[in-house]
Length: 101
Image (cartoon, rainbow, N blue to C red; front, side, top):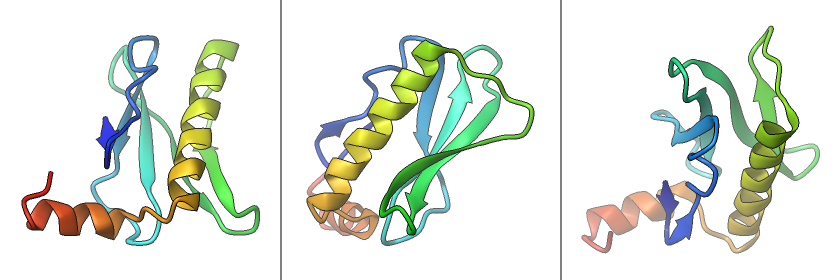
């Protein structure tokens, strides 16, 4: 997955797939985290205002090992960089409508 030139598919080769949620907040990204095996929703990465950063919201009764947690942590880090750069989802939509993507 690429978000305005930032490659976010760095870890999709392992056990997880990250997909931009179809319904998202215009001021922050929402990323669904799926298991590659069975395409099961494991949780969601979204903005947590109290901490002013992205956080992972796991689905109930999900268990993660260190490789998956490291991949989720790296995606949160990259999304925080994007957020601090001032890049918002509505900018992506505007670029797409203008034919820039």
